[in-house]
Image (cartoon, rainbow, N blue to C red):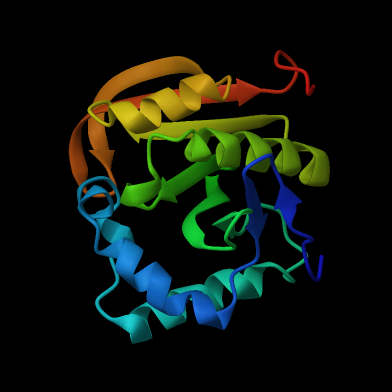
Length: 182
């Protein structure tokens, strides 16, 4: 796979990252939600953000599946072309996990649900991924709602550590043999 065409939804499009995204990615990484729920995705400076972006962009042409490498795309508003977050499929213990973040000023508009739903459908159709996991901190009510609104089913709750956060961890599953694409 060399380049992925943008994935369009009613309000958004998901696209490959480009070098011009670095300043916005860096700024988003400093927001309180990222610091709380995804502290391992907080960048020390734009140079650090550049290294991560280059790594993620290199995966688009890797010819590997999300069971082996992450496929993370920028989430952009169709109305303004503004980059407002990211969504991706990444390896997790020989399975695939969905990850996502939306800039705080754009939260509570359904964009995360729209992006997660589009990304899971794309992952299923492109790579024939039968099951996608969603793993979130139990206290992260917003991310829990996104997964639940994206047809994920809660399968497990247990104490643990996630992105250095310790507490109750919830594991959700989207099984395409149960949830047929519409």
